[in-house]
Length: 135
Image (cartoon, rainbow, N blue to C red; front, side, top):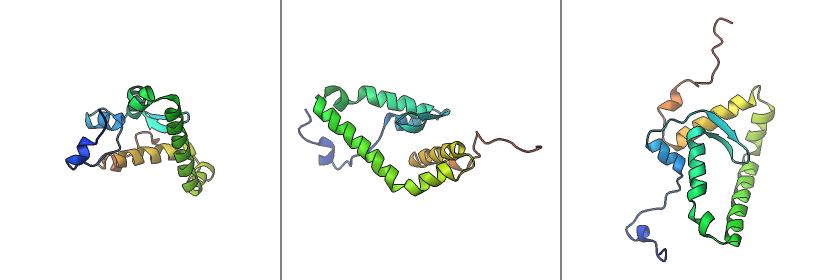
C-alpha cells in the first residue's frame, strides 16, 4: 500500500524514466522532430510517451489539489533553473546561429539519442540535412 519501498529492501536503485524510453526499448522509431509549446523539443515517440505519462501519472490523478500545485511549481522552477544554468549556450544558439531551428533540432535529437544509449544512430547523417550538392 505504499508504506515501504520494497525495491530498496532487495537492493534496486530508483531509475528516473518515462514512457518514451519504454517505447524506444520496444523498438518504436523516433519519428519527426516536434517543438512542443511549454514542454520544448521532442519527437513523435517521446510526445506519445509524454501523453501516456500525463494520463497515467498517479500523483496527478490521485493527489489532492495542493500536492499537484507543489509538483507543478517544482517543475517550473526546475525548468527556470536549467534555463539560467545554460543561458550563455542558449543565447548563442538563438542569436548567433544562422539557422537556430536546425541547430536546436540537431542538438536535441543527439542529446535524446545519447540519453537513450543509442550511440549507433548518433554517427549517422542528419536525415533533415539538405543535400546541396550540384547547387
